[in-house]
Length: 324
Image 1 (spheres, one colour):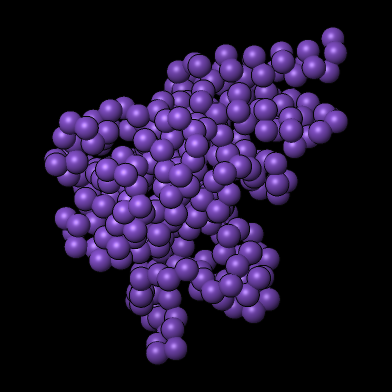
Image 2 (tube, one colour):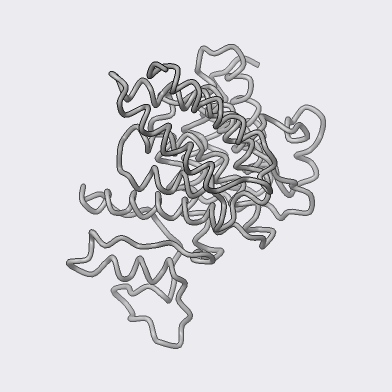
């Protein structure tokens, strides 16, 4: 059997596994396929092209399986797959992982609000988030703006022991100390407090938006669907005919939004969404501009409804040059 035939056989076996009900996933089988795919791609004459083809082939079925319960828990083999490949540090592997950011962000946000198990999603999100913060410190970039918290020391106070600090706050405080910048932190379930969750999602999503042009069409459509859902979830007027929210959208987003509270749209998250939608709207792909514009219009309506001044200005600037 040639190398190409072996690779095709492993890909076919992986696709068969991904089409199964996630409740019946065999962690050992999926781990074996993951390792074989990695080995086959690495012995290819052009590993980066091999990983790109793998990303295009697995994007949709992997997204479908990742969004279905019980995926997303601490025992989810797909979350373990993404976690291990991102932690490997290879640019090609990290590119593969980041292509699933829209699915991770949406399902993590949804389950966080429903208070259901999302430990697997959270582990992947915090791994990427901590890596981004570490890179920013090395490059001398300022950290993203965050809500004030008495659990994190400032120039005006030192946190007392009676304040309940979250795991994420403890990590951020510890990472501010000299000599511990390269420490690896193992994310755990329940590490993120409600006021921190939006910032984590926005920071992780920003890493995708910076290179959005390099990702597959499936990822682009999922980004538009994510923007649409973040803008309209929790509002009855957002589900009217034509908004797009009543549609299931691309397979892979998943999640029932019934009786879910609106998602907080922080300034950082708004800027990331608008920047990504700008790429989608002005893309020459036949259907991508339509999805991008529809998401931007609903985002503008949400910002107007809540009187979010920065969001109103950003969405107006994005949509103003477009023909009616």
